[in-house]
Length: 445
Image 1 (cartoon, rainbow, N blue to C red):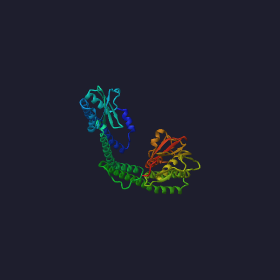
Image 2 (cartoon, rainbow, N blue to C red):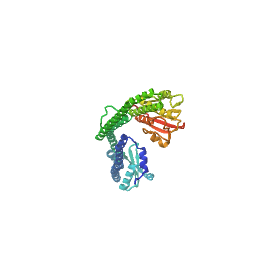
Image 3 (cartoon, rainbow, N blue to C red):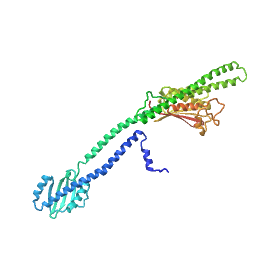
Image 4 (cartoon, helix red, strand yellow):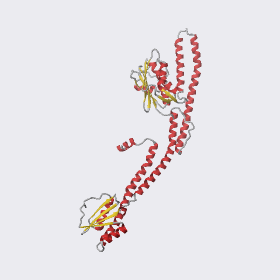
């Protein structure tokens, strides 16, 4: 049974997601906790113990002075106390301690008051004077009050802060070394992630070599082997479909020529349409096999790209409208030809099933959206996933008499994935299908 703790959920939401940040927390948190424990347990106890012993020593000196004043002149005692102990003594005759109700304010006053009451068994008052770095001690006697001004260093461990300073300095030094070494260990993982991301959008990082720890090197070696296998598979698929297309194109061309020579024969027109459709299907198969292109990425003005596509695609019976969030200023770093093929395929798909198309281009902070709407019959929501798969023809929404191979949306989906984006289908405001290309805004890798 899984136990759900609300605090852990809250911590999970605010905790960093990056490996480097999490590793830093793993290093820093134990040091911070250790310092807190040391400060609370050791340092506090150390201060209290040292202060108590120093206070007991001062109380002993005061007790000795009070005993001596019975037999010696107070002026002689005061002179010797100042000379040997740096203690100033004042005698206030016929005075009583009236402010004994004042509570001790800090560790020094608490400890010294307790030691005075325990050691001398007399009414006493202690006040820590921070400005003068003195401690005023008043002891009530039968004939008056003795006032002692004792240096603060005599009753309080004033150099304990040095321990804190050295503890902080050593922690910073240790953390700096740990961060330096940790950064060196994280770099190979980041490099591997960049290589995988680049390969995912069709760009291979040259001279990529496994580096770092043994486990990271193993992962990098496995990635390189996987990349080689994928490249080999793509090459074999492309060559196979290109060979099939090439081999079938020649006999189809001969058949087409023979049918055109006998154009007066009955049924030739239908056969010629079938041959043309077969040629079109072969071209789409070849396009599908070549979506993983070796084209280099360049900066593309998306506004101009879409406007050029619209100028080419617009016909007498087709109405195409274009809306954009920034006129003439949306630029994107990608494979120009691949993105153009993706958009052209979607517009051609919309042209087949509708006579009104609307294209919108929106730029946001982290993504770019290109939406293509048509007023055709659309696709049921349950078939959205199916329609993006290769060689799928939907019976319920699209006319089966229309020529095609079921690769239009699949080719666009492959291209969008190679660019690091995705394609989503939804209901169009025009009544048909809306196809949205979502592209991440990334810097050149």
